[in-house]
Each structure stands twice: as C-alpha cells, then as structure tokens.
Amino acid sequence: MTTKLFESSSRGKADFGWLKANFSFSFGNYFNPDRIQFGMLRVLNDDTIAGGTGFGTHPHANMEIITIPLEGGLQHKDSMGNEGVIRFGEVQVMSAGTGVEHSEMNASQTEQAKTLQLWVFPDRENVEPRYDQKSFDIENQINTFVNIVSPKENNDGNALWVYQKTFFSLGIFESNSTTTYKVKIPKNGVYLFLIDGEIAIDNVILKARDAMGITDFEEFKIQCKTKSKILLVEVPMNHH
Image (spheres, rainbow, N blue to C red):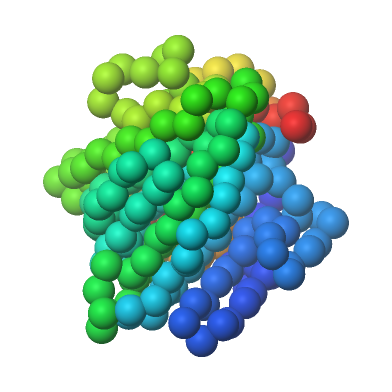
C-alpha cells in the first residue's frame, strides 16, 4: 500500500468575498503542476458561498460533476430544463457530455452554503447530458460507508451513477471506532477526504480537510480518534 498525505493548508485558495474556495487540484487561477489530478479525479473544490450569491450560468462538457452540500443549499438551473434546490443530505450528479450550461446559486439570501464539488473524467465522451439528485440518510447510518455514486455498470440501485468506474462513499464514524475499506475494482486508487474529525491511516494522522491518496492496496484500515465524517473517492488511476 502506498499513501500520500495532502494537508488541508497545502491546498490552493481563492477569496472573492462572496466565494471562499479551497482547491485540492489545480483550478481557475490556482495552478500547481504536482496537483493536477488523482487518477480520474480532476477537481475537489471545498467552497463557502455567501447568501444571495453563487455561480452564474456557465458551460461544461465531457465531465462527470458531483456536488455534495455540507451546509445550506444550492439553487440549480440548467439548459436541460432542470431546476431545483439541492440541500445538505442530498447529492447531485451531472454528466456534462456533449455540453450543458448551468447556474448554482445559494438557495438562501442570508445563510452561507458550504459545498464540495468534484469532477471526474468520464470513460466515454460526448454522451447525452444528464442530471440526477438523491437524498442519502448518512446521519442515521453511523459507522458504515454509504455508497453515494457508482459506475453505471455496477450500480445497486441505491447510488447515483456516472460514466466512470468510480465509487464515492460517505460515512460518519464514532470516536474510537475502526473501519476497513476494501477496493471495489482492483488497481483503483482511493482519494480520502476527511470532512470533519481526526483519523489515522497507516499511523499517519489526518485532521479536518486533510486528504490522503491511497494506491496499491486491497483494503486499508481507518482508525477514528474522534467522531469523523469521511468522503472516499475510488477511481481508476490511469490518467486521462
């Protein structure tokens, strides 16, 4: 097993007033040649969006986009005619494919919204754009990883699906608990993002918003020192 720690303070940052962003990988004005992608995972943005603001209409193509609200909600509107609010507890996927335009505005005029947005390269290009969202009751499924996104081919009907052999899992674990993650597709790697808490993997300590890239493994153990909320992104490691 090979691991690499990415401390939260080493991320790219942007503060536009209305938006405070943290970039795990090169994005916008942040460019770091050592942080382009992790396998097929291209973007992990940890955003805080002020009330009454948001991202105006903008285009995407040939990317699988996954949005996970951590606090508050986002008002979504796109060129496919979808409109609605995605809130904490829900997850949204969008296959941009041949091209889609969308806007994402804070659903509240006064409260800030906090979201994670991840982009994964698709395994096929120019698909018909699609959009889906679903509510996952993570809070009431303690000490287990809930699969929130999976490949179209390996979907159990509970998770949202995307065009890539990637599995997103989200879990809340009690302090002093240990859990094991087994790779779902051999040779895939895992990008672990610690949303909250403190954990240890292979005797390395991660604190809130730290991440770890884990490759060459069949399974690994996570020891939770405090109550922890963990996002795991299993992706193919061959680069796009």
